[in-house]
Image 1 (cartoon, rainbow, N blue to C red):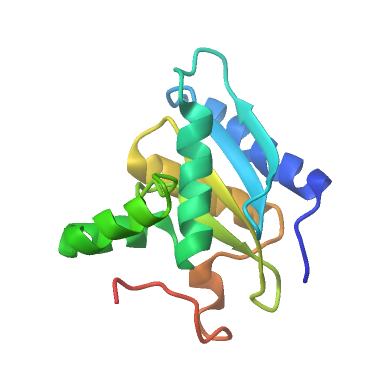
Image 2 (cartoon, rainbow, N blue to C red):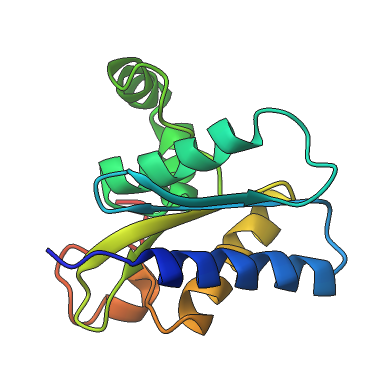
Length: 156
């Protein structure tokens, strides 16, 4: 199974951190995991509050565990809170259903990892994640919806 390399993960996180500085966002943290949720890279800008690692990893874990971006998981949680509560309890609290966690896909749509961004607004976290994935030559679910049957880009 293809995996994102340490060099690629490092480049992706550095890109997101640099872009956040350019946009003068609040301090952010980013992580990349492989497709089995093993951490490849975690970096945090100066002055980030505590628990940023846990938030980042929880977003990446949620995206991989449920096969969709955390923005879709969040939307679904609003529609079906009992279901989301069950998922969270079954994952021993590992799932963090907030925008900013996205699947990283290769050119043919295979999941090679996940990127999570946290610290800015939820929408900014999500945008930074998508931009960083694309800037580093990978694809998001939105980019592969026509070639991958299980790429989820709607609430269903």
